Image 1 (cartoon, rainbow, N blue to C red):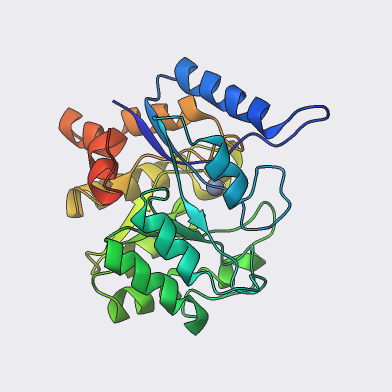
Image 2: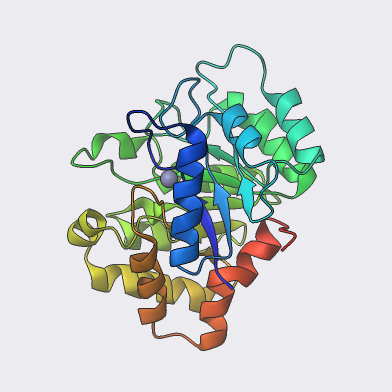
Length: 263
Ligand SMILES: [Zn+2]
C-alpha cells in the first residue's frame, strides 16, 4: 500500500475548475499506484490549488483523500482555533500545516501555540514547511530546524513533521533534530530535480537511511505533487539500502499511525 502524505491539487488552468484538478489528481494516483493521499490546501483565500474550505468541500465523498488544515496567523482575521478544533473533532482534517518561509513567521511565534495545543489534544501532527525556495535561499531562515527543535523541546508530546528535510542542508537538519523523538520527516520534494541537484542525491539517500535506522517510524512518504513527480519519489524510497519492511513502513504504516488514518 502507498500513502502520499504530502501533495497538492494541480494548479488551475484556463477554463478548468478545482473539480477538474481533483480528477487529474485521482488519475495520477491511479497511474502511480498510490492508494491514499493527504491533500494540502493553500493557506490563502484565493489560490490556484484551492483554499481549506474549497478542498474540504471537494473531497467530502472521496474515501481515499484526506485533508490537512492550513492556517495563516498573519492574515486570518478570526482566531483559527475554533475552526481547527471542529475539523479535528469531526475527523475532516488529519494534521495542520504551517508555511514559515512562504510566510514571514517563525515556528516559535507565540500566535501558533493554540494550534500546537490542538494538535496535542487530538494527537495529530503539525507539519512544517522547510528548506530553500527555488533559487532563493533567504526564506530558509524562517524554517531553520534550530527554531523547530525549540518547539519540539517545549511541547514534547507534539508530533512534528518536517517537510522537505530543510534541503539543501539535510545533514545539518538530521544532526540537529536527532535527539527529538517527536520530530518526523516526509520525503516530499526530495526526488525533485532541482532539490537533488542542489543537495546531492548521495546526501539525500544517506540522511534518509540514517534517519530510518536511528528512528524507524519517523519517515513518511510524501511527494509534493503536482509540483513534483510521484514516481520519482517512489523510486527514491525504493533505492534506499534498507529492509523491505522499513520501506513498507515509509510507504504506508508510519503514516497510518502518525495521522491516525482509517484505511
Ligand atoms: Zn507541498
